Image (cartoon, rainbow, N blue to C red; front, side, top):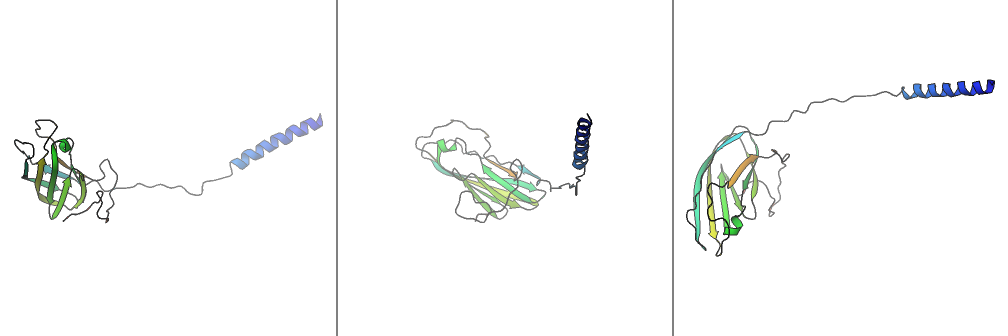
Length: 176
C-alpha cells in the first residue's frame, strides 16, 4: 500500500510541476498602433451633356463639350469611359478629355486612365470623335446615359502606385 501511495503522490507532484511550468512563460512585448490614413481626395463636378443628334450608318463626326471639375485635395483620380453597347453602334468612338494641361484619350479598347490632380478648379474640355458602323445594332434611342466618370483612386479599389511603363493599355499617367 505504501508503494501505491508513493506512486500517487509522485503523480500529483508531477502534474503540479507541469502546471507551474506552463504558467512560467511570459509575454516579452505587446504592440499597439493606430494607422491614420489621409482622407480620399474630395471633388465635385458640373456634368456636360453631349448630344450626337440623329445618326445614320457610316456617319462620322465630332462633338465638343465643356465641363467643370473642382478638386479640394490632391490625389489620383480614375477617369473612365462607359462604353457598354457603344461597340455595337460605332466602329470608332474616341474621347479626348483635357483636364488642366493633361490630355487623356479614351476609346473602346482603352476605357480608363488614372491622372494626378492637385487642388483647384479645372475647366475640362471633352471632344468625341465617332464613326457609326455600316450595320449598327443597339438601342435606337439613348438619353443621358453616363459616358465619362471620375472618382478618386482608392475608392473601392485600394491605393494607386504610379507606373512608368509605356505602350500598354494598362498604362497610367499623363498622355500628350
